[in-house]
Image (cartoon, rainbow, N blue to C red):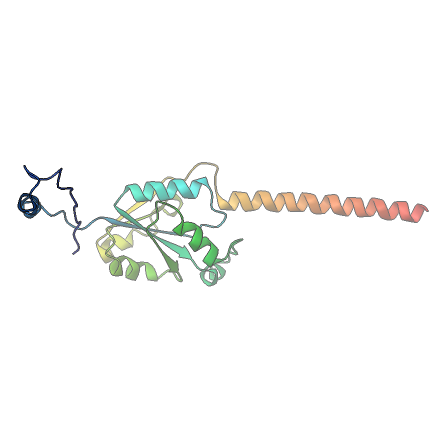
Amino acid sequence: MGYQVYCFSKHAVGTGNSIESHNQSLLNLKVKPTMKTVITYGTFDLYHAGHVRLLRRARALGDRLIVGCSTDEFNATKGKKSVFNYQDRAEILNSCRYVDQVLPEENWEQKIDDVKDNDIQIFTMGDDWAGKFDFLAEETGCIVTYLPRTPSISTTNFKGAIQALSEEKKHSVVHTVEHLMSLVKAL
């Protein structure tokens, strides 16, 4: 197991400013056990406030957050197509201050190995997945928890709204073209 390292300035440790006093104070420190590492998974397409809030809450569960981001190939097996490719989504996630590491999520089965290989203490997902990953607690010994989703904010809803706008625009263009054709025929 790893340990946290504490750093102190010579002014904050010991009774004097001597190196000996500083070193003795460091020797007297109690060592804190390994930090809690949390993991979550998702596609994280069209990154939005709901994603940020989920990642903030996930990070608050521990000291370190690892995010498994679904690859384009894995999304295809789920019947999903992302607007942004995996590399772009991973880069966006890596830029988030709550995220310490991004792993590619390539299949459903990798979660057990990810939890074991990364010494995960807490596995969390949005509550739309409630109960689906409870088996990980028994398989790996980690805590499994489900966080509430942000109401009325979802990538699926955004994609639906974009699709509706696209359909509306398409109908508008078709109507305009039909009108122009009728004007041309009238000439």
